[in-house]
Image 1 (cartoon, each protein chain N blue to C red):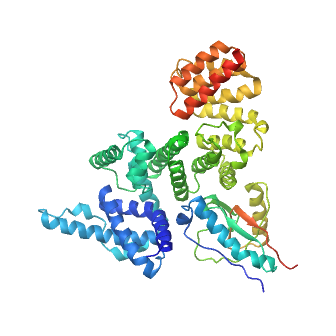
Image 2 (spheres, chains in turn yellow, orange):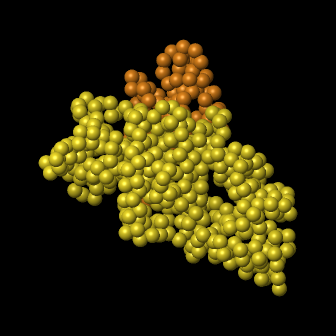
Length: 416
Length: 124
């Protein structure tokens, strides 16, 4: 097989993976078996497709081949076990007729949603949910995931194994979800996808695989929206991720230090991603059913629309944060609104807004960072120094600490 | 005779392309187009955004239905297309409503934002 074949086959397998694994999981009701069956089907694809060309529906091909190989494996195993476990191969009769309804989008939709949803099992901590989704649905390798979470491969392997065992033990529901359940699942999965995105976004400066997580989250967001094309919050989620990710090339300097939005070279922003994000917001607005992802996307869009930082529509951004505060009251959102307030009404007004939050946000890096910046603008240098000190102690990444250090250095110049 | 060339591919695979691979494919395709544009044989070329950005207007006996997502019927065929410069999806939907009214009966219009547009060249 030549390199060109390996390339398109690799991309086709990656594209078909979520559908195929999701259907195989329904057949075998076991994540490991579904993965092994997909693996076997992929190996056969690598042998077969260069000769015969790609099948018309690669996911359907992989499901059929994967299922047959999985059944073979169960039969071989059964010779060693006392009795074959009938329930493990449920839904596997009539392979030929079933393949036709596999083409049906509605089946794929519940399969993929189920697979994403089991990864979000409430017993699992958020990091395990994300790791599992990236391993099983996206097909990232354990070393890739371990690198992105900054843990050893062995530790990540163990985490994923434990997460799978937890899911197998709790027994997932395989019946078709009703409308209410379906919409709850969509909400939970959307939140997990945004966590994956943020995991990549907040610290991409110090990782070798800078944006693997962001790229995978966008891919999952696209997948989910494709399954639920009329869901405005999913349009909002994908738009939000696309617009934030469009700034990826402008967010860090050569030393991996953070460049704030105001100081970024807007020429480095990816215009294709912004355009797609704006088109999705436009679509979502027609539904007149605002939600937290749509509003955050609208805020990101206002930044994206400003050709220069000083042309940012802060009044509109402040209003959108107010709406967000009513939909989902949270001190962190108030903190974000304070940034907009400082641009419209000055640092004192913003400081008045955030001072009451010191109890709840006392351990939050951004709180002290913003407070220090506002105090500095007001000329209260000693207090600013204290606030920046508190921020550094709470920095989550080296890039954040370096950024605050630069503030402290600039204070020294002001002080003398 | 003018010919339209319509491009079909597996969207899940194409959206998995890395930026460098995508850039290379686009450059390779442009190299094929360039001599044709220079010879004034190639008209507009458009690369569309993914189907997740699509909206479809379906004609009905009464008010047409505006639906999210791409055109999905298999019993109708691709018969023609327009390229429109508009400020918003709302504006496009209005234009498409007018088209539907001018040509009532069956059928659908899929509205898909254009990602890249090359005006090309054509003899007038």
